[in-house]
Length: 157
Ligand SMILES: CC(C)(COP(=O)(O)OP(=O)(O)OC[C@H]1O[C@@H](n2cnc3c(N)ncnc32)[C@H](O)[C@@H]1OP(=O)(O)O)[C@@H](O)C(=O)NCCC(=O)NCCS
Image 1 (cartoon, helix red, strand yellow):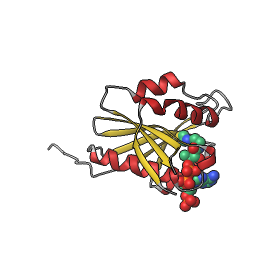
Image 2 (cartoon, rainbow, N blue to C red):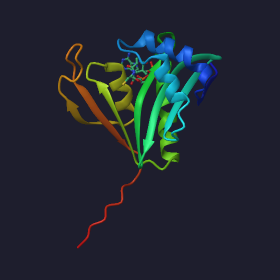
Image 3 (cartoon, rainbow, N blue to C red):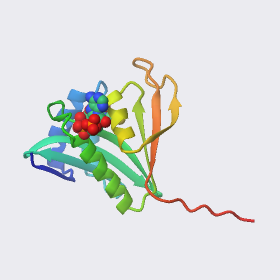
């Protein structure tokens, strides 16, 4: 299949919202997605992945002060298991590096095996947990990060 990744536009919002509704118990609304897609805050980046001309998924990332935070990554059920989630996450990692970020962070439900596997595959490590964070099901929120570059440590003596 022919895959492309590009910055999301306002006309993508209905398709992104449909994928969101199909994938999450508490999906972001179309308005929330539109707000991020049209944000003038240069730190917010919304990426769309297309496969064979169809919208297959999207991801949101915020970069600030040398850190990139993944807000969301989702692939349409019909397109999962074909490497698209990994492609999209690698794209975000490249973009964050280009933006000079040295650290990428994210938060994931402890029971989300597919996402945890994906993050581990790309080198993320677990750095903390918020116990029973999610009201529904009482699952932990797992905090993960990935080093993107070298940190300079200055020791003053
Ligand atoms: C998580 C998600 C984005 C993965 O997208 P995907 O396109 O299906 O994943 P890929 O095909 O690119 O798989 C890449 C790697 O992820 C892991 N993975 C993907 N699906 C998996 C599954 N069902 N079970 C276990 N590991 C899985 C594997 O490590 C896989 O590598 P491999 O193929 O070499 O084994 C997708 O399952 C999804 O949209 N889930 C719902 C939304 C969600 O939970 N998002 C995360 C919010 S934090």
